[in-house]
Length: 112
Image (cartoon, rainbow, N blue to C red; front, side, top):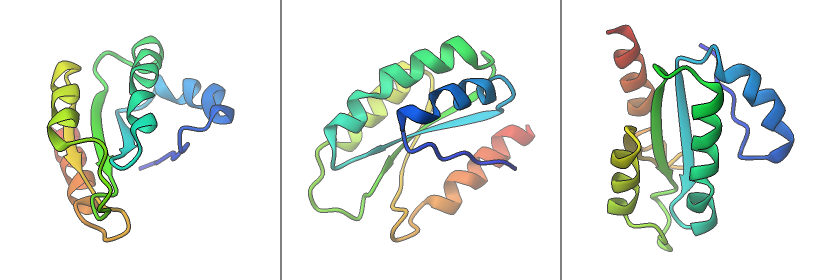
């Protein structure tokens, strides 16, 4: 299992494009307390559609659910994921909430 966390940084764009082709799953993560991170999702999806296999498992994750200052309601993330054929889950990396579940669900889906 290889996991690449590019943190959405532009300097990793050229590297990530080469890894899309062999990826079995791609996780797009946004910060539920930061609207601009959600607004970037269409750009990342365009890259996935251009470089990744059409069979790649795509998961949308709203992170930082431990925060009080939510800007993106759960239903907005769910709607986005549904429109784009993605699985959806909210997590808290800080509190380790749903993180193991995320990877277990990915593994289970890929094993089928």
